[in-house]
Amino acid sequence: MQEKMKKVGIMGGTFDPIHISHLILGETAYEQFSLDKVLFLPAGNPPHKRNRKGGASDLERVEMVRRAIAGNSHFQLCLDEMDASDYSYTYRTLERMKAEHPDTEFYFIVGADSLFDFEKWKEPARICQAASILVAVRDHVDDERLSRKMKELEEKLGGHFYRLYSTNLDISSKMIRDWIRRKKTVRYYVPEPVLAYIADRHIYGMESTLEETEGQGKEKIRQMSGQYDLKKIEEKLEKHLDEDRMRHTRGVMYTAASLAMVYGCSLEKAQVAGLLHDCAKCIPNKKKLKMCLENQIPMTEYEEANPFILHAKLGAFLARQKYGVDDEQILDAITWHTTGKPDMSLLDKIIYLADYIEPGRDKASRLPYIRKLAFQDLDECMYQVLKDTLEYLSVGGSDGIDEMTEEAYGYYREIHEKRKG
Ligand SMILES: [Fe+2]
Ligand SMILES: [Fe+2]
Image (cartoon, rainbow, N blue to C red; front, side, top):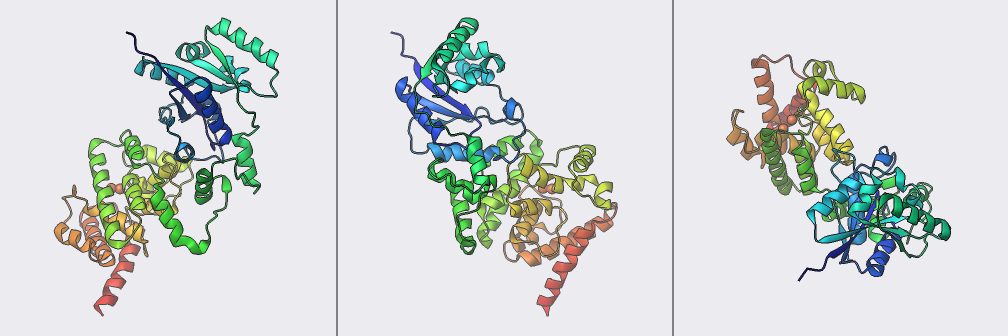
């Protein structure tokens, strides 16, 4: 006997941000077409929205969807379009899904307004071959005109178009973003956990609902919510770093996490900074220089002469642009992981030292001593490592020494000497 085909709805969208109209539409489709589940598919890099200025990062949009659909067992997050290395096209995604799940009928949900643009989409006939189209009916779209359009498209593209009758809520993501910018309330338009996330991350310029004095509490919420998808970052990094660099990167991440445990630093920040500290390392030096120039990243003379060192500054830039990190502490730790600087933050020191002592390192002198010291006294360890580094650079015939490293050494030497009394 032939098995019954599964029926899966797909709600695609930028979800910048997701709002209740998306959720109601998904739920209505589930009920009206007796679907087994509805996939929420955030568009990774939609061709018609390539420059979403002032929008949320990819990671944030995904996290907002995750929070919005949590608690609905037939809603599911689908990350198939989140690979930012390519532009996402609906027909490609649907064809891939269809090939991977031959036992499933897909129902792609679109708004009535989109239907009138449907032929401008990339390969509309292929979309229709891969999925039936559910058209959400809107009050302001004339019914007869819609019927004509659906019939016309069915004949032209050979697909199936069905009406999806849903409550007409005239809400758009753009309206939500505008209202937030104008400090108008969007409460109840956006699910509460999403709204809390927008406020906490200051997305669309929203002010935090948490008091400044609650800094400690806020930090806790961020750690608990796990805002960074470490696995996703790691998968993306693998495309840009060679095998050895990945091995070193994982070593730094785990060592940084261990140090964070000892010194009471945010574990998540230590892991994210550890993962991303060398994200620009495998870019050829010429390209590093070019990227710094193009993106107005200031360079010292030493850096221009030794562009390999630029991977730190450029790494921080890419962490923000490509990996959605906007936490200044993490970005600073990446920026200073190569040279160090005076008066480094706890996270700066953890990343700098994790980079030096991770298990894969074997070149530096006195490693067993330095490794032990890192877990006992960060400032003393900074002093000892900077001392060894300067000695190594002066003997090793390098093209000079970065001034910042010398300044950092001076700073930590003073602490060392003061302590000695
Ligand atoms: Fe590095
Ligand atoms: Fe490194």
